Image 1 (cartoon, rainbow, N blue to C red):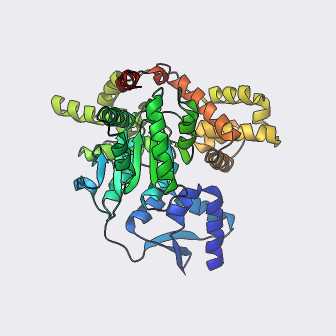
Image 2 (cartoon, rainbow, N blue to C red):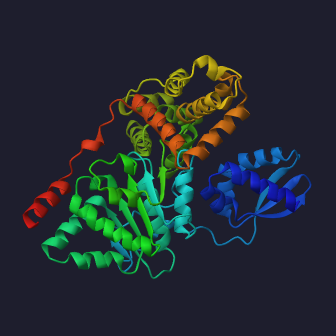
Length: 462
């Protein structure tokens, strides 16, 4: 049985991102065989619940690949004390520099799905001092959880005894500190404060450093110092480093020094889970009919979903009537923007145009790489951006659902690695996102108040 367990681990290692495997799968241990159940030990209840919710299908697939009719059963061994509820995190000014961390932004409160699993696993690994790289760049649109994960790392570290300090700043904060330090002729003091005894630096919205030449240079020097000491650095931004305008190449290369991970908009299943979690927070239980309607129609960011739940509770209370489908439909019509319907045909046409293949070739039984890879990309995009089932997607391409599962995992693996294939897929994702969000503002040209402040002051001084 030990050999069977090793074979299962090898299969999981090949289909899961490295960070996910190391954080969640590697700590598991084979215990025994009980009838037709393979008993696997989990280090704690949180780990057991998480694995059953997110990784059980992968274990079942790994067992099938061994052609053995067994089932997996997880069991907590030497369970630690229950996870600390982080509602009352201490504010320790001796350890925290910059902004105060939100008590709500913890790992326990983060809802994980296909759209953000890699980002979550990587941040969890960093918080537990087991990262592949201590540098991470979280890239996502507004309200998709990048700030939540960034602060979750800080909150997790605050709970554990350490001599290191935690610094949490936005790009605007950092720029303001630089300007203030210059005015007081104490720039070296400010940089020394960041460098001395720092455990982690969390910098939010680094795309806002665009055009701030002096601040960029000072930040680059500080990052060099922290990188050399192997300190943890977490960046967040609304776009990848290569797309930030007016950014010094030396700073761009420092942003690219670690893992660049994109958080995608929540898929249907993740939206369902978020709605249930937010409703529970409000002390209500929504009917399946209402929950499914909201999940299908609220395709924006997580804040929109949270706002919808609060709005439903408020309307229900004011009108003194239960939360019905009609009430949910009325609210969604008011708050959800009208977007073009995204279909499988649109995605297929987009992929055909990009890879210069025909629809007939994509739907054929041909297995040449120039056709097989675009077919996998199309399956992946259909699964990610539509609510179609695996069976429905497979039927479109004349394949079974297992082929779709394989395609999705294969593309997920390619996205996690740098290279031309990763950028091609990201390009197609952006095309789809722009199609479904035509009113999205162009944040690239946004001019911030702190940018003008820095420019005006430095022009007078330098």
